Amino acid sequence: MPTYRPDLGSIPRYVAGRPIEDVARELGIVSIDKLASNECPTEPFPEVIDAIARAGAGVNRYPDSAQSELTNSIAAHHGLDAEAVWVAAGSSEILRCTALSVGGPGTSAVFAHPSFVMYRIATLVAQSEPIGVPLDENFNHDLDAMLAAIRDDTTIVYLCNPNNPTGGIRSAKDVHAFIDAVHERVIVVVDEAYAEYVTDSSYGSMIAMATTRPNVLVARTFSKIYGLAGLRVGYGIGHPELINTVRVTQPPFAVTSPAQAAGLEALKQQERVSDRVASNAAGREFLVGELTRRGFQVAPTQANFVYFEPESDASGLFDALLHKGVIIRVLGAGVRVTVGTEPENQRFLDALDTVERS
Ligand SMILES: Cc1ncc(COP(=O)(O)O)c(C=O)c1O
Image 1 (cartoon, protein in one colour):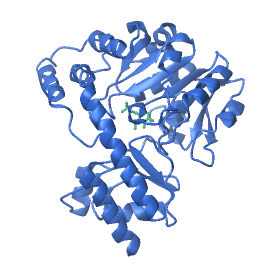
Image 2 (cartoon, rainbow, N blue to C red):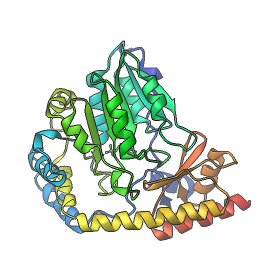
Image 3 (cartoon, helix red, strand yellow):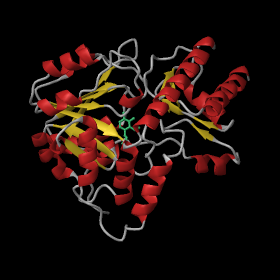
Image 4 (tube, rainbow, N blue to C red):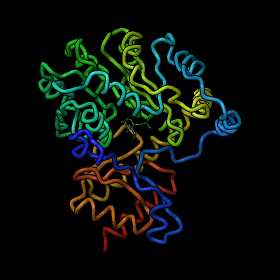
């Protein structure tokens, strides 16, 4: 028997949304809608698909390990110096590498609960102690409680804004004040995976703050609005010194050449990204309205998903919808449903009506 780290067995495994093919095989259902993983419901832009194909022809070579072109393009997009940008195989890699850089026995990490499960997993993989702080009664980050939870041994705090799985935001003013109140020895990771979907004017990215403070890192992804979840590409923005220090934990050639090419092309399509923001906002409003009309208490959301806690058992609702060909996610006492295309949203509601009646 190999000699494993004794704590590995107690680290929760990341549970992904069920793949369409898997459910189709198990239940023998031909048409399935997956509203489980907060993915973009439409295909990548055609120019992006072409860029992936072109890059595919060159994959006998290693990718550019410095991801120079994509880094420069992200920097230009946000009006930053390239040194402030760190490209990775999804923002999960940014989270994991950062956790490894500040973790170790005798350290702790603070995050909201429920929030993105990778904060807990990355903390435990880094052999650090997780400190989960319950959301407030509006399903939002309780920033005062999070500040109070920071201990002398805390090295990192995660803010998920908008929060996954609930979708709520904290305003730019509140997040700014929170960062001001955290000691500079603690890294504040502001995970903005769903930032592009936000339409509430009180929201603001912490990118400007990340480049001027020594301890703030913003995590962004191409997996959501840009529709590249299957390629694994995301980025961090922070002070060059922070980025230079923590990226030592990243494997070389982490971002494949098709992923780099796709990110580069996707960034050029800002007009169509705006169309996606608008259609997501319309779908989100529709789902919130229809669920509320049916008596569900939906958490305020600015993301591409909705969260509610059904009176009946959440797992039972998940199973019943699964048998109708609609995959959602159970997270704690609630369920999270990704905003899909118009027909997908309607199919979810129709399925919900049949299972709630039965
Ligand atoms: C809040 C949050 N951060 C990060 C990620 C990870 O995204 P990526 O695909 O870039 O690793 C997700 C994915 O669902 C997420 O919900």
